[in-house]
Length: 311
Image: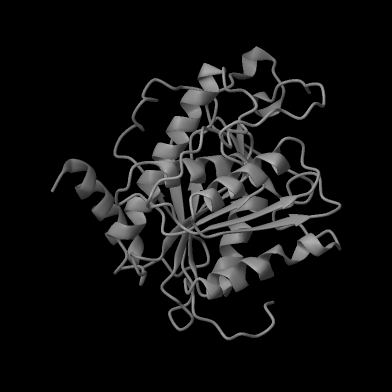
């Protein structure tokens, strides 16, 4: 057994007794510092909105927060959840914790991924999370289903690659501990929001391995790299607003690429929505995206559920 495997296995043993507690167990993805970021030194920060939602920035130590359903309701399906934030921040609650809680309510194990983000030292005087100033509103031309708005930014490209590596490590960790967490290793998927969708897609496009997801869900998250749909591409579910700048067309292009390759794909495009919606209710049809997702999970036999009106 390798040092890496030993450390992860030890962490899982320690977490087993508390896995069903209300407070999730948090496991580090890598033994020691994450590869490629050993010298990163900017402290991670957490900001909280007036509504109580947390946003994380300057993530350098990736982790996985374990949310398990009650044993009596567990379906055996599992989802790694990657929050979004333009690769600069992570919307931890609206696109992470509350999503995991909803999944648990459907009997699905959930694992919220804190993947690495762009490092922005406070002394730079940049915007929160290192967000760049607004660009002129002009839809980009999308080629090869690649909707990356900054393809020539070497730092963001590096962070995307690190985020994908973190997602793959998370999928491996979930499968390695499938028995302890009452999970079917053949029903482990990944779900990403915004840039987290780009991270999830990257994991699905990578060469087939024990880190390949069995299903792929992206919420207003287009691909951030050229898409060559592999033979092992999993079933794909997409939900996006109809006027989300650059993102809507990117998601449509991703759907088209999956269909052209003969792979299962479903897309929902919601009117009157122009940006990320997450778990926030708006009094619009988009509020029912979770219902559509649950129906899709049942239809794809990822979960077995009563064909009742989803809640």
